[in-house]
Image (cartoon, rainbow, N blue to C red):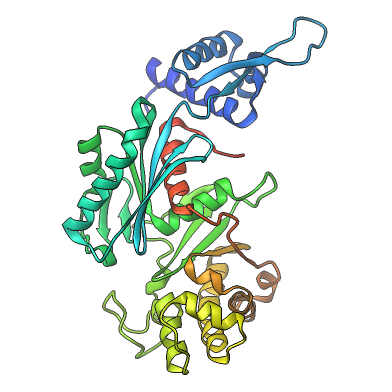
Length: 388
């Protein structure tokens, strides 16, 4: 049995520094005395830590607060642009990267089309994207956060399997750390998007649990439990797109037949609409026809929504999570699709749980994977809670 060792002086200093930084981030502008009260640290310790944070440019004095009879206290705040993260979304159609500050504000964005590249060509495209963003990062770069499709071992940075990029057992984290000499965190793109919605898309009254389902070419869910990203024993939590929902169904790109992706993904919706006579080639074509009241588009959207609603019912039954967020290209289908998800999820859930289900579109409408990957890097490297 492992016996925990006493924290070293260095570990204690790092813990105190993270605690003070997180307090400044969450509650600033705030005085040294208030930081001491909120953290339980001594005023001397807080003063020493604050001096260090000011010295490294992470914090600054921003004026004086109201006086309670004595000298007005000096207020402190985190410098939002003191550090930046390169956040990457290795998603559908393009690799997207952005330089993001400590508040999740995008300072520069670059998008490179994939053009069918996979394997080593996709890796070369990724390097090119990072190289472009590095031109503006300078010495403020904290690290690189990556959101990518597939099953990711986040402890090692190894992509165990990413079907559409033809990456298997790729040590992407190690490759990026060796090339750029900064910390790297890698997560599944759906998991990263869930973290972004939880971190940057909510408010102070938000629920502690959330499921965010990304629906595009593929389907995946990110799960936040008690404010933390849940990845499962093998890092594959939320891989609902490859759960078989139709016996003897169509062949999926994963090799199985009848997966959820074969009936509820963007390509599946387009194929179903075409089979019903609609001249559609993209999900945007289906959306436009749906808006015009086309019966084929409406039927295809509702069928896909019902299949997805079954998956939602399974998640609700297993986890009793009330807040279900849907996002991705298919979410543009809007209310007919959403209503089908809600109806099916409610009909297939225990009534006591069904009454609590809320299925809604994401509040973050762009860069959700980039922001989530960035948030994951910041929380791990700086200990920030990233609560707005």
